[in-house]
Amino acid sequence: MATVDAKNFQNYIDGEWVDAASGETFRSKSPADGETIGVFPRSGPADVDRAVEAAEAAYEEWRLVPAPKRGEVLFRFAQLLAEHKDDVTELMTHEMGKVKAEAAGDVQEAIDMAYYMGGEGRRLFGQTTPSELRDKFQMSVRMPVGVVGAITPWNFPIAIPSWKTLPAIVSGNTVVFKPATDTPALGERYVELFAEAGLPKGVLNIVHGGGSDVGQRLVEHPYVPIITFTGSRDTGVEVTKTAANNLKHVHLELGGKNAIIVMDDADLDLAVDGIVWSAFGTSGQRCTAASRVIVHDAVYDRLASRLVERVEQLRLGPGWEDDTDVGPVINKSALEKIHAYTEIGQDEGAKLLTGGEVAGGNGLENGFYYTPTVFGDVRPAMRIAQEEIFGPTTALIRVSSLDDAIAVSNGVEYGLSSSIFSRDVNNAFRAMRDLNTGITYVNAGTIGAEVHLPFGGTKHTGNGHREAGQAALDVFTEWKSIYVDYSGKLQRAQIDTEE
Ligand code: NAD
Image (cartoon, rainbow, N blue to C red; front, side, top):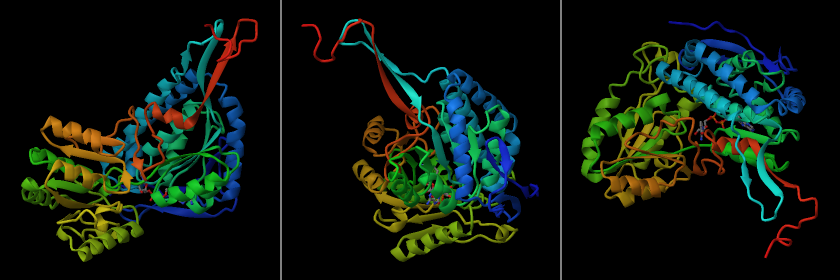
């Protein structure tokens, strides 16, 4: 078994590696086998204040660096990350637990984002418009805002930091980044490589520690005008309330309860491939995971039996082993929560078709493994069909029409991703129009976003913002409209216009 040496890590503030002011530490442990990945500073408000001060000082210079030059640092970072893709991937299989192919995809997403946002350094387009008056010019430009507080979860420990820090930094902001306490080594590696790419000191700082110490202080801090947060719905609500005291810009990417619709004319083998990938990839710990499958009555029994047959062949194991299909879940409390939902589903009268157990044997008992679980006969109002479980559990729901399928898909508090398998173009277009989610897939599962389109969701998945693509720039910039009058006289808008 490969191992990663446990070592001591520090915060990165103002271009220097430093311990927490308190000197306290915490350990990051692998969910796959309990090995210690590293020892990290357990930081608190004093460390956040120090990082914000550094980011504020760096902002005054960084905002003036020509944007194409800022973009060039991102290009160098993309290259460095590509060179280190294998070692970062390996680290991810140990610290976060996802399987090798998916960990490599997580790193690749950050590489893609670095190239995409690096290119923004030569765009950052504004608008020019004609004026209603003669000899007057007008345009809008994007302005950076200042210090960005970036708070991230553990499930995409390289990709999600990239979605936040890259558009922020290319736009001229500086960042204080707080990664999740389950994946600090990956956060640290991300910052280390970005610094090596040539970022000036203070532009990107990392402060390790818990949500109630580091995260909360970042959200409260009066000199942090933007908070970009990805995590659970309930924490998102808390962040919003706290940030409201300083009228901060708050960008939220929260939970999902995503559904795949399988119509009576679907290619069932393709649908099963899509369901297995979307429900059990990353052990179901994706915000876009397919935790519901809405199946037309005419194909329900065939789909259920083919799906169960496939799921029972999935091999649980550590992510670094080549033949592992499904890795561990992130920690003990996640394992307990997932199992609690199995009991809830059974109590509600859903039929457990396969899985539903904490896995052991062959060393699995040293980690947090859960057997891939499929429930049948699930009714849309059941808790397992409404609440985010964030584990390898999916729920089959039977419907008799496309209208019913769309209503069931939309009948949850979240609105992140949706999918339809159908060979009928009319079904596909109705679904694209009527599924109330930020992302819809046709003849693919609920996962597979690329960096150049907006990413995010409706309803309680967020607050109307999007990451990635051009939309990300709207989170990290303010518009300024500029009017230049070269007539040499006072011209009053709306009044001195020509007849
Ligand atoms: P979480 O809400 O527990 O934690 C997210 C981050 O917030 C962590 O860094 C945590 O330390 C920090 N935090 C906790 N309390 C805080 C507070 N009071 N103030 C400031 N920061 C605080 O979420 P998690 O368990 O790490 O992640 C899983 C959740 O993330 C799921 O709900 C999932 O759907 C969601 N997610 C959403 C997206 C998306 O793009 N929509 C992507 C990935 C994950």
